[in-house]
Length: 257
Image (cartoon, rainbow, N blue to C red; front, side, top):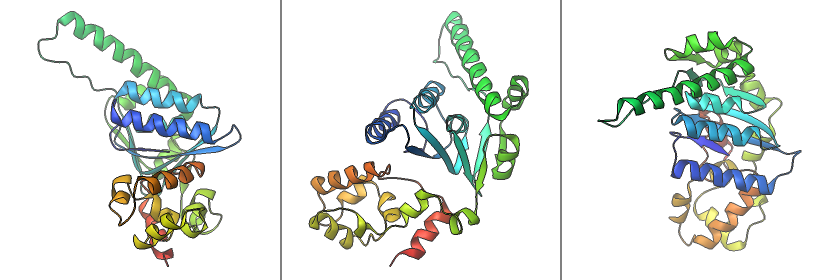
């Protein structure tokens, strides 16, 4: 599953929870769910909702930051048992920013501030637990935007490892091997397979980077083929619209035949 773009209630949260529900149905407790993260953060309540879903999933979870995990997105990473960042990724900590509509009663403003103070305290406790730093130290860093490159994030305890060339070209993660698999190895109908040929899609890694809307623009590719492929990708714990790290995109492109 992926957490990409601005974290917010509404369509974003609906899409994340839909994908999460599909994964829960398609996996068992011994399976690993991979969460790809490239987000500038967003709504605090929605962030904590995603965090709780991952923490209580009963699945092994691996979070991979491919680009950035700022604000709430860095908290989502902390929900994952294994936390990986790509070499050029950036993480950022800060406290909640609160806006109130004009002419809000002072009493309601104060109540809202109290709510977010409690939420921030909970965020600090989560970061402190994963980084083994004190809550006060986390709170101090969150008072201003504090950025970490990949190595700094690992050193501070926000991540466990950097996804480097050795991991790509030596002992490849199962996810990377899967993305480099030819689409001809998928159990597709003749019609769907021909559509992928027409779209010049040779690898699973190329397929998952396409959005559903892009696929539907492919000649003779309809909803039936879309749903067929979505179901197969779901079984593989993949989906359309995945955002991949630039290094991995280059490798997929070079492997295209």
